[in-house]
Image (cartoon, protein in one colour):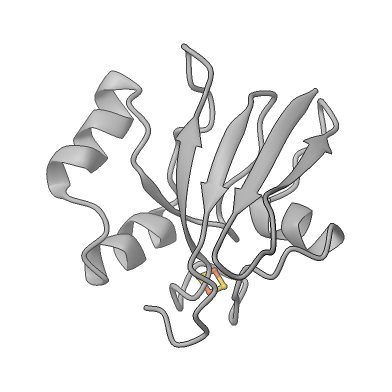
Length: 121
Ligand code: FES
């Protein structure tokens, strides 16, 4: 069981939801299921609309792997460096910024921040 806490200026208060262990949905799907208004457009890792900042609370992070599309878009919008990509791939250090439509929720507690500005990025 994982606690996923969404925080944003767009929410009147933080929203914590429970992701069922073993479910392999995306963060965006989880947000939509709970009516958390993370902006999105393509839902396919190409537009960058669903940018979120993720803090993983467990000591051994699991949701580290980035899809190729996610890497490319995050680089294009300046939200990930080459060093951060290498750290994710080699040292299992999760990057701060992610695309909610590409992020697979794992069995770990996370805090997800988003701006909620439809024009971002
Ligand atoms: Fe387009 Fe996630 S909705 S990248």
